[in-house]
Length: 414
Image (cartoon, rainbow, N blue to C red; front, side, top):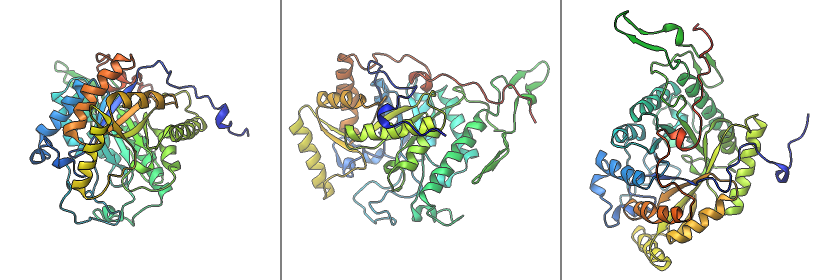
């Protein structure tokens, strides 16, 4: 058996060209990533649990021609402690359901991708497959999901169906099975399974619905789905490295393996360009080892941003937010504080490490989301590295991903 090539010799079949357009997404969460974001002028804290608030945030992202937005979610209250609720009353606590929020926003948008977060550890893949398929139908092909695992004991106690937390490797193995079941269920209806012929009284061709008969360590699912195949065939699957998942800890290798084997887009949490290169190399090598090197995989770096017209103003605003929070802001991602031009320099530098794009986390939605769409985007457009109009009607299309054929289409139903 041949050994894996050294990192210096590794050349994956799919690598974004330096001249390829840059892809941008934003992560939406509460009033923004900073704990005091809800106290920022214009933050609209009284509207955080309304559909209008989220519709406006996504509309702003779409006006900036961004590829997609992600909606953060969890199955426990936000907390500064990994051991349970921290009892704090000075920070945003509580969330709307991410999938339902995306579905509500979908008819109000036309181009931008909608990617809610799903915690695989405590949800059933059958339920999530039809929820995301429904979102894809409602949005006419702009759905995805961001899969995460949870190793929070207090979150697991909300369900009580097994001991928690699971070992890290088991959590990611289960997430991989979760994704595989979802993908098979999306394919369990052929594209032309629906006939809808009033004259003959045939609505569906039963021979074009398929059992998936998945048997694994974590799930046993027969199928088929109850929801017709999504418009994209396979909505976008995205996953994060360990630091982004709900309480997961570790060196990131298990999360890198999940991205390599199962995702269309992976989010990389790293502090600098050297960290990007190391993570990209590890993920690409793992994908090659799985025999998937030729299959497209976009890698985005996660970056929390505080933007202003000049660097001192950005620093001052962040310091003012820190004072309101009572502690300096810390993040599981790299944090950028400065101008749009300086951020554009950093993005162009980091992308040479093998990235397709970036998922930006606004420090505050009220200030930093418009700074991204109205400051950073025009700067990148001036440099010729970002789109000036949407080029596709689906999320897969925006990312240059083909619509896959159904895996069961050539086979008769069981």
